Amino acid sequence: MDLADASLVLLAEELGSGRIVSTDQRDFNAYRWKHREPFDNLLDLSG
View 1 (cartoon, one colour):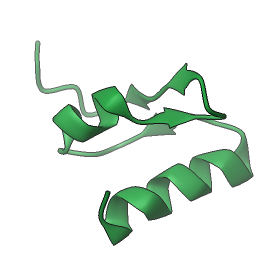
View 2 (tube, rainbow, N blue to C red):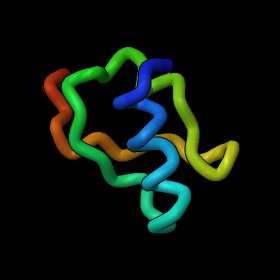
View 3 (cartoon, helix red, strand yellow):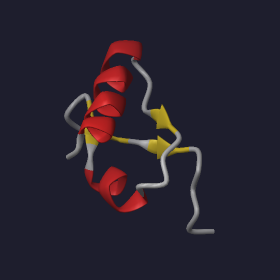
View 4 (spheres, rainbow, N blue to C red):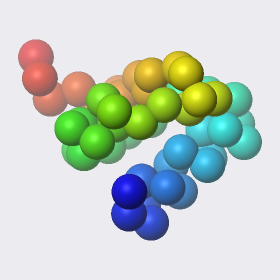
């Protein structure tokens, strides 16, 4: 996890929302906020 990813994870925890915008889909498919919830990447490039 790099500094940018860690910042988004901490911000999600602070704001109580896992909605993010990131081009780093591989990592954010693995990261969880609140230790269990997957992130909802609003910039989903898979589809």
